[in-house]
Length: 621
View (tube, rainbow, N blue to C red):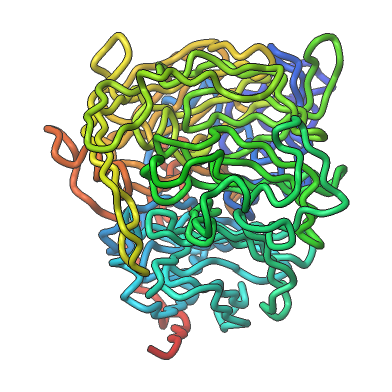
């Protein structure tokens, strides 16, 4: 008997037949992303175009879209998501990373002590293949400003590459866990730590530093992927030679033109301990061959002690990844008085503004403005508030500078009330996502304001160089601390939003199933219709969610969605005493349709126990 064709079993013919996917969890994914212009017409380059079922870096692609082409899980069946398996690492610090999946292996790197695990996805329960324990210096825990976090590994050329809290970068063989190299970039005793996820471009491993609250000078370093040796290092402050501003530089505005602005915009030698650290996300345009790197707040956070624009803090660089040469630089918040770091992700898309299709860079800054820049020149095309703010009255598009409200400027030994947003901004490091199916940006944001008093401070190496004394409270027209929004990057307008009682501080995942996933700091993991903003599925997890959701295709051909619950970081500092705030923890949850997985078949209801555990590699203490 001839079996009839169906869309579920023959997904490869669905596009030809004109029928819709049925949501069969075993159906293969559509061809890479099925990207198509959506509501805004914006698109993106998904280079390096990894296999659609894998997740090889935290943002998945160079453009920082966090978009997956998988669509087995969609608006029609997401309500059937159930937990397939889980993995606990036993670490009490804040979890801010996504796992990676390459082939049949999942890779997890924990917060301090930054243990790396390889999990076997072909076996029930994903047992451990190998473990690497780097034993970083414990002094770094006391130097980290905002918890002993890590924002995850990256995979390249057979290596798992990640950073250690004590100022090192490491690479291990992804198949065996054997150490390949380990490079020290700074000393934790000085206040320098590293929490960021590296990005690999060509043979360059790009790693930045943390420690702006300790008076650490910001830097981005390129290491050789094969050896770990330094290729170049570009600083955020100081003379042009240190910053790597030279003949390639083109200023987007007149006030950003001139010699040694990273020195002359500071009093005396304050630039030497001026912050501008590089602990956020780096994106890459392979066509322009430019990386985009944000810098943190100036140091000390007391503005009275550092008159001037304080370049290049709270800023953005476009650099050549091979040499570090700066092609343009832009400062979001000149003379930052409120701790509005510029480290948030830069999402690279293409779209039409003013009747012209342009290469765009979308940046939702901590200062509350959503910027859309021309990424070839650094000039602003759109700059509008995406959350309640009052520190500025607008952005002057002719100059690129904010119009600061004098009543909301920080003052020494004087309390200034109701400055919006607070010191962690309208959005912190938690990365947004872009869907080419709608052309929208999706982001977790805050509605938080502060009452601020500054106190002058003295610099002592390795100790806080801060001076901000503040209290926080919910802002806006409601008492909601968080919100999830869809943002039109071509017009600077919201498409829809979902208010949340607690801070929303997870990363965001967008998929070809027209879904977006996000988490809340009180532990709710949600799936939302990307077009309408309707919540389609929610699951309460054991701890708050400050990590980044991801999705992958298992060896069984099934789509899984994964996220780590383990609240910490600045979320615990701001909301840790609120009623209903969850305890810490560290558990990876993996979901599938109906909870099916290789371990859920009838013959797996009992097991014969695991085989001998995988290799454990211990670095010297």
